[in-house]
Image 1 (tube, one colour):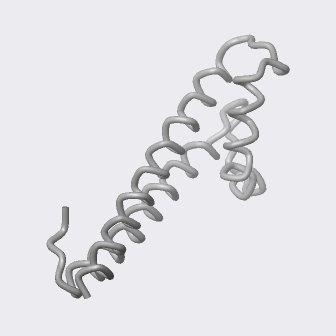
Image 2 (cartoon, helix red, strand yellow):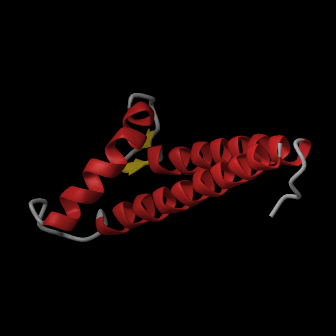
Length: 102
């Protein structure tokens, strides 16, 4: 049971780390959208490829106020809730099988 608890704890840390990376990539995409950048630059294309799947569902919603697009803000909130729920569940499972959280 100890190994299973360690596995759940490791998965919780992995999910937390992936969400943190996605936060920063989404933040970088927002920041570069404020400046005139080359859309064919490798970094810009990488940011778009990674963050487009996150933003696509929210772009379908009417989240624009004039020229202001609120879909990245809603994506941040969704990532926050997904991270908290998944990490909480995994740490709870780890605790139930005998591993203390973090």
